[in-house]
Image 1: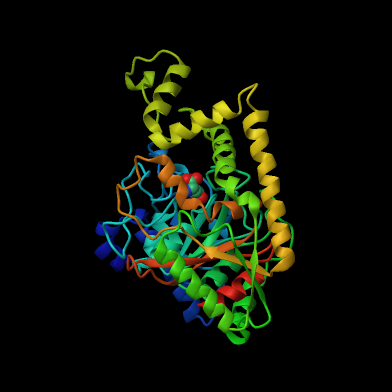
Image 2: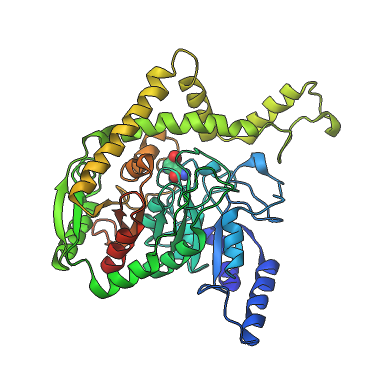
Length: 458
Ligand code: GLN
């Protein structure tokens, strides 16, 4: 895999940092244990993985795709990083992302965009475009992503790979650089459903260092995949969400979705149509809640604690106060999209506006959660396209935030409700010749039926 990275990553640019030496050392340790006849630490021992550069790994640079963290070497591991290492999984390096995971194309990275291996003139989705492209380019068989509004599922969809967002609280957020704490979730990515499930079981589970972590047994998603492979979907009720389709969705995507519905029907599922009327407000609510939370979370980048510091007196700079250093550092260190969201969030949270903006967005969030609860009264899992469009051209939407935000039309409702959701490849769009993803959404803690359907569909 290191050779493959050497051969193709100059074009793809999935990686921000490759840990060649430490990966080889780790692999040798696994080999030595194997040679001594010891059982592997897990079914995935020795398998290489690409880690999204928003999780920290001790001693390896962590940038979150931002200039403001340039030069920062974290002194500790995220809980997920520890679990990967304990399982014998070999971490190849850190993958590219939109700055602080804000975006849908990986073009907001301060270190240049990642390209879609299917067509190097196109985007690999975002924010986890680096992880998805590393899988699609066969640079790594496993990857870790984070999903706040779709950053695992939409990149999986446009690169023809698999990615799952667990139930909120299913995987620890300790050591994940926070975007929006009530939405962020770490998840497994791979090229097939079984690999995704195996990785899911490695990273999931209670962590006392994350106060939102769920203290329940890890869902048996590997068994669920086996069941999907042997029994299929016979007898399951699958809901098609009326509001996640139609306007704003590419013809080739809808055609592929209809074919997926037909295939699931043939496989013995009962298809029911469900209506979630408040989903039309999901994007608007998300773009108040997310900026509000991120404006607060990003206050920690104050030029004192991490990475970049501009105009430091010690460097011969002429700024005279800590506040001036902070303003200069944040001014230069953050990109345009990050500044846009900090300003929006600060405004939405200001005295006098709180109820009108943040307060009403939270009410909409509750209504969306109730829409889901009602829908799961009629169906075991829900399905929709994962992304409204296939991979678009680099540069096409980068200067149009609204056009960029619309890429998460199908994924944001599930993020607001905290349910588990994943994208699995559902073929090639007839109009663009590019991969399409099917989104499968389970009820809260319903990872098992979700993976069963994914495996049966694959
Ligand atoms: N594209 C969405 C956004 O820009 C989702 C980001 C994410 O899931 N990290 O907010």
